[in-house]
Image (tube, rainbow, N blue to C red; front, side):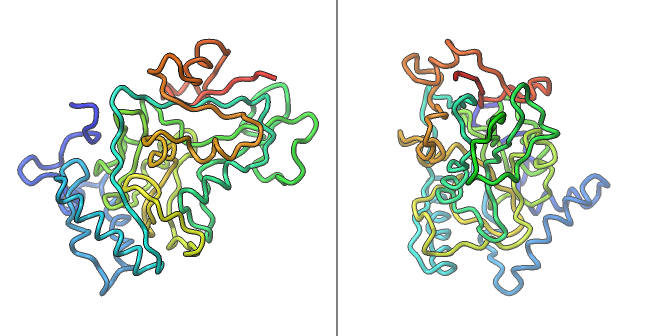
Length: 315
């Protein structure tokens, strides 16, 4: 299997992978009953406005350039109709000889949550109900205890004496359990290491959410609410474009930015310089320097996911 192929085999070699094929196959198996019900839930919201073209859209990896152009145009029209603003949706491809990684200096993170707020703004996440890809945990100095960590502290009163702060988001694992459990190949790992979700292919079964050991995926139980004035209109198909009800979403390292040579929004917003990001294949990159010269560690190493999000103390 090629590195950029969707996770797992096609459901039907003769017909190709479609959600219709999945529903037909899952209906005759006990294991598929829950996924079938979940996949139908978003349709109850659509009724007469159901978009047949979107439902029958090919898998991302099967779309020709011309077909992708039609899909992007349709999504831009949908965003215009929904929010009344002109949104650009692009298909930003990964760069060759590139693998992204993140490092976070826990010794200088002050828990201000500006990273989470910047992520929310950049990625068009729902404001009501609120969706944030980054959780910042407050812990007692002396050790990492996720069970007693406080993620409901007041960010206006940080840093507190005797505390340290650990932001947690998608770790873009080399062995991501979330992609393996998806029954329709709606999520996969890209050649540059970023794990993505095709929102038009996701059926909302939430298997990936259950499989992630870092609680890094978010499900839209309700239709996302976003003020048009707050929208980031520069979006990408596999990243920050507006999402519908009934699908999963997650951090993508702001792939629409980093694949064009920019930093993730969370890094740019950090006031203490606690965050570092880059291409691990570049020997001159900051991330490469940190990995080679700092005592880095990963969260939940024992689960064997091989994350590309690293932590270290340096202050």
